[in-house]
Image (cartoon, rainbow, N blue to C red; front, side, top):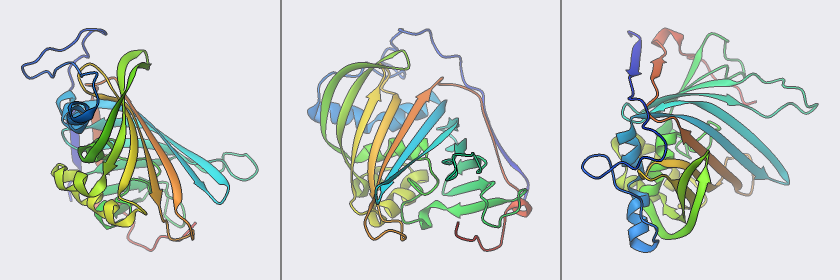
Length: 272
């Protein structure tokens, strides 16, 4: 299969502080909560598609049985093509030495590709996973929540409250807090993340996902934090997961090349 290449040439981000006007560029985000605020929050995914692309930083904190670990990622995402690339850093080994190398993850509609997966996978091979077949829809398993999926979860937002004006990364934002229903989000989601969200709605301990989201003047997500309750099959009790995604430098160039079929590992993946 020929190598697929996605490339976006984004426009230069407008000067800081300039509010884009209505008429295809979005409106200023309202201060109020309630249904007005909920409507703005539910539309955040569409605003990211309008923005084309961005850089992303992710953090996933997991707590189970008194143990807490943090997984961090950094990369870029194209919201129109629904593809992205993250470099995910795993926690250090027991002795504090960085024994694990970062995992390269390619995010694509319906699929997650991982390189340097370990557990018997050759160094030059990729692992491909169908996100719709994962109990959590890959909102947790990959160690980073797909940035578009993180936004699409908000389509199921309810009980939205406006928490006030703040600053994130030097940008003025409005902070909203609420709860998203994964089943509702899946029914309203765009085609790419739909199956993953539907799988998560069934696989999570609860389909209700508390969130905090910080929107800029154009309604774009600058920061979003979800709190998941996930049963991973290795714990008797649900694992509490806090997933945070930061988005910045909208309109950047994104060049994501999905692996050829011959580069994908076809063997069995051992449990680490």
